Image 1 (cartoon, rainbow, N blue to C red):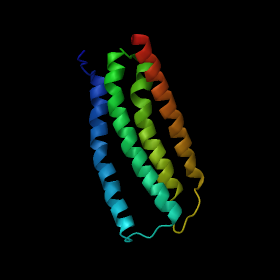
Image 2: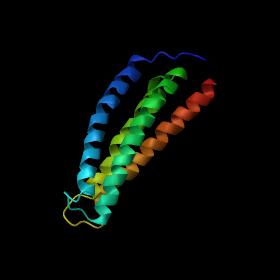
Image 3: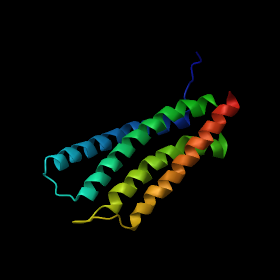
Image 4: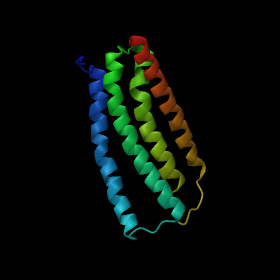
Length: 139
């Protein structure tokens, strides 16, 4: 089993990602308030709040998991940047699309900020496709 030493780029990204977990915890606390009825939301808003929270957590963990693979594959330059940062960018944009498009009293449909969700999905696809190709090329 090979041991991968993380590059300074990956360590910096990992440090920031680990710090964001506290904000995800805060979102979890907010969801407990929603579940207790302390925050009044429509069914649509509840669904988008749950989806935003879940996507944030999953994408942050996926971002952390991807870093050693980028380093093991020797990712560098522009493609190394994409492999390391596109998924964390998606971890910001996709939840933002869920949260910001559902804001507003009594909202039952997303507003135009739902576009952030789809832009984030493009970043996610770019990141995982790039990393997958780099890892296969290094195998």
